[in-house]
Length: 136
Image 1 (cartoon, rainbow, N blue to C red):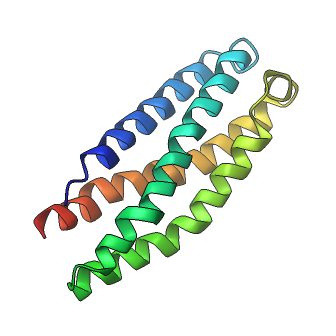
Image 2 (cartoon, one colour):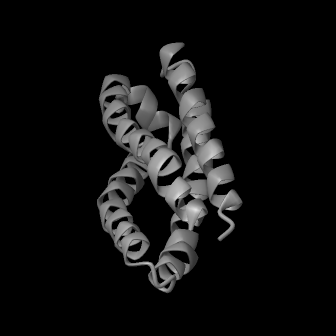
């Protein structure tokens, strides 16, 4: 199964998280417009990634006939529901420069929490899940 597109999207998302971190570090209020733009852009990539996982990747794993891979896919899909909902809520809260400028420390705390979970999940997919798929 070719998962190159999924891996490429991970690179895009992880890169966006790195850019967001740098923007936050150099000043939320100063960079509020660019932070909001990055959140909107990253959200588009994440939504596409999640949709294709749900419609293509997870069903394909269920149909492999490999019970271990099918269970792993189901576990990852179930776990992603909560992570995705948290991220999408975060993106709705923080997608305007005005909101970011008015609540910079609230944004910082929220971003640290939500983006850390997303980052850790993608790293785990890159080191555990994707290699298992590619080994099949």
